Length: 98
Image (cartoon, rainbow, N blue to C red):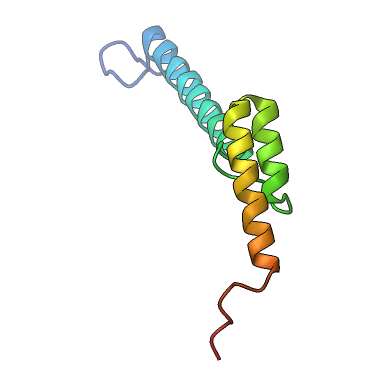
């Protein structure tokens, strides 16, 4: 039978405890990192961006409903959008370069 007493070739109880504790902490950190990465990818776009396919008018309506703009700001921006739409359809825009 082998003698482990004085040779230091056997891990003591404290060594096993710290090894298991270290592995548990490492796994917890990895799980937290993966969860954080996934949550960052699922985060919706910021308040200044609008989803694809949404018109400027729909985005303005959405901002009013969510409270990002006041009714006064909404009226000003809506008038500006309506003015741009009328001037753009009247043909006052410069022709595209050839």
